Image (cartoon, rainbow over all chains, first blue to last red; front, top):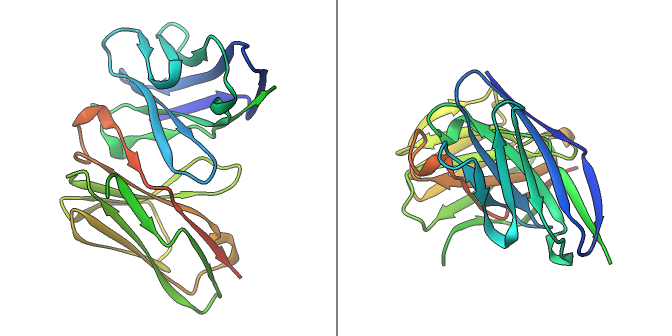
Amino acid sequence: AQSVTQLGSHVSVSEGALVLLRCNYSSSVPPYLFWYVQYPNQGLQLLLKYTSAATLVKGINGFEAEFKKSETSFHLTKPSAHMSDAAEYFCAVSATSGSARQLTFGSGTQLTVLP
Amino acid sequence: ETGVTQTPRHLVMGMTNKKSLKCEQHLGHNAMYWYKQSAKKPLELMFVYNFKEQTENNSVPSRFSPECPNSSHLFLHLHTLQPEDSALYLCASSQAASGGAGGELFFGEGSRLTVL
């Protein structure tokens, strides 16, 4: 069984501040982990993914995430928030050889960027 | 056209209507999916098709009927829906339903369904 918990359904940061979105996972086997972003009135878009290579993963738009097995975490960070980062972010876990149909999504975190 | 295209983007229907949602992918993928996205709930996987064969049906009510005539097209036929079925329905595709490309899904923009 696998599950994902995103801490904080809403996060607000000021423009230029650090963005930190939290994700903890549960998996009985080594997981594949993903962050997706959903802009208003759009579908989800892959930001980055961890597939058992480097534990620090860099994605698009300056985002990165670090896989920490001891903490079962895969938090998403960006050093400096931009207004265009306002969106909903979803963490997802796949624990069966990266099988897409086994993806389990978290409930999402709505990021607001304040001017 | 590129990516995953969904039509219509918005649909309003009565409980006795019959309508269909359409999804088309131009990525050469072999797996296609329907997800339901409701407010304040995680994405719910509804159906999975791999090489046109349905491989997963997550206890979806029979008032939702999927159809996958080929690897590029996916439909969701709707009939006698309930108001609680109002949601954003997202179509996605991937190279294959198991393994491949690290499990990345490519999503369409969704069809916003309102059931009156």
